[in-house]
Length: 412
Picture: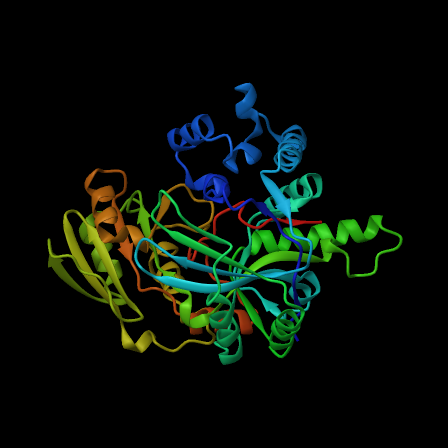
């Protein structure tokens, strides 16, 4: 049974939330980041990039200490306030593509993560887990929620609809043209009811944020070891999450780009593909696959459709039937010689929001030799992978919504 609890968020005052809220640090170009740091003293980027104040790149423990200092300064200057009552936070996003997401920001249990009630579908990298764990331990807060998804639930929908009738605590539109709405839910009866509904769920799935989840798990273990009075209810035993129904999750594909043909000529490469695929040259006509096990390929100025041969459709498990895995086992590894899709510098990725025009442009510019387009993975496939205890290849999904950092902050 899932344990989802309210918490006392540290958050911006209503008048400053639009100035504080920021995309993830890595999503900004250097020029964008510097402009925001220069022109907006309230941006959450000021906290996570504290070296800007001194015009110096700072890393490691020194940076973590300065992040903590900046966070404390924002609280001292009353840019941030802290709620007096443990609350859930109904969070609605209308993005620039007019997709609408409704969810609840809450604290999820590390124990549920360890016991596979919160299920995973991606591998994590140990050194990244460790680095982020040390970061969390030093700064003492988490500002980026893990995206969790649950089966559509009429009771939760009714509660969310009921809450949204009231005036939102926050309503702001970003320069990225996404509009965000947040409602505090602190009424004791509603809080209990939300907790009871989640407690009846046997499984919840991580959609995005595997490293944040695993790092929080490491943090909880480290803090418990140092706390002789550890009870299991301390704030470090939970991590901030944004929970949305499965029907509202938007999953895009990640297309693949390869720098060379592994010493093969174009003709030799196509002949090798023929063993596994029915191939049709579509010329300059854009071809975007619409079915599982169908792929698009752009090579030497032409689009190709690749249909996996039906006699290869027998799969032992959910992973083998996944298109990103099929592409690896039939083309990337045996033909193009790419063993490690996570670290091989010959492979690049572009998520589906950039579409096949981006793939075509990258190949035409000679940055890559060949590009492959895929069909998005479904929520059913994601859940099957997680239920079978398997993990997808890296860059299998690009998932929305994307929350802004600094809107709700979880302290521990």
